[in-house]
Length: 532
Image 1: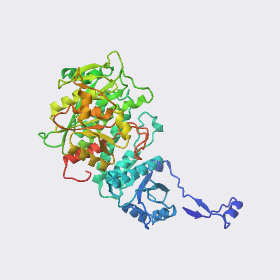
Image 2: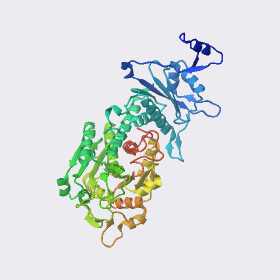
Image 3: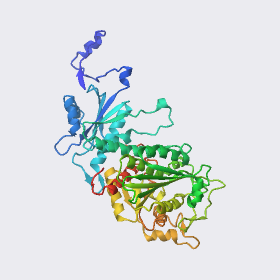
Image 4: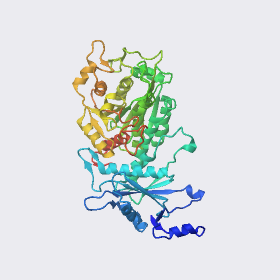
């Protein structure tokens, strides 16, 4: 800001006051735009490192170049406003450059920060996501049509934060009331490939957010199947849609016994992506796709029931991951199974105590219809293993309240029979900022779901450890292969507490899509140590 003395010939009193020695008026530089100019407003996000010891805050490399471009105005403003560079703290300046309507200086923390062993996260990468996300969203609120992002030395993470930050679910708002999505561009960095990878990964997570947040009457099993075809076929992945007749013929009975309670026909998707030799065994993904889970006859409480449109968040994450893997051309074979149905009360609904015989000839008792997730996943999981002979099975599902109460939105719960797989997921989460935490898979829990007189497995087990019991049930279905179960009940649905700055409060998150993509990259390219 500059202190200006203004003179108005039309008002002598004003002239006299303004010319007095006591008058200091700060006036913002304003520029008026024609209608054509308003359509093309550009903004820029630049980073500021936090001050350390006796040193003041420091601009990032690209920010220094922008500062030179504007004759040092940014440096002067940083000093004038005493900006600290703390993560997420920002200040917006207008009309300091002819090309950019607004420039936002965002703190991105300490310059030398990296991996934090206690938090088990790369704080440097996560700080850049936060800074880019906050900066892009604030410029979006100022109606910018194009936003240029400083890479802050991490172009991939800057792309992720910015793209996730500006996206919001507004499919059913009046078009004139929708918030515009500015075009994102990388500012002053040659690493366009890393920026593009970040956009691919964040757009995949945004796809999962959109699918999960869509109302249940607009995201039925059939609609989800069509969305899968639209998203995957252009990327080179194949999609097979299995309908009721095929499901009955293949005796996918555990899935059908839940689906029959709804008038919406069930669908099972088989998705294949071949990124390497067809002879290589694939990794199999399984996503729970209950497009609305009312609890069936064990009806859930009506308060907040609309959140259970997100009971297919696991399916959304798997679909989004398949799209990103294909778009990024990962050198790995992946097969995915997505069973899609509703769990509704009706005269055809499964009743508490009903028993079904699974494809492996074991019997499962449905003692709690509210816990339909493991029932829906049981036969599809067995079918996928017999069909694809995978080297690794990963299932993603919103299953247990216990996990949500334990971890909240802090991390995805992972259960695995392989220490190597767990360590790979842990590494992936530390790089993406979307962390995992391992829970026990002990014989103690196996006994609580299998030791019954009249059937082999119960769908709820005995005792309060709902997350561990659900994992123990699924573990009974993968006897001879490496396996990981991701329970996303706390992270994949509505975000309410401790919301990540580049996501939205009270909206579906699409988590942990980027972590799953990073894990697949590590499995495909084990010699690489960093993000793709």
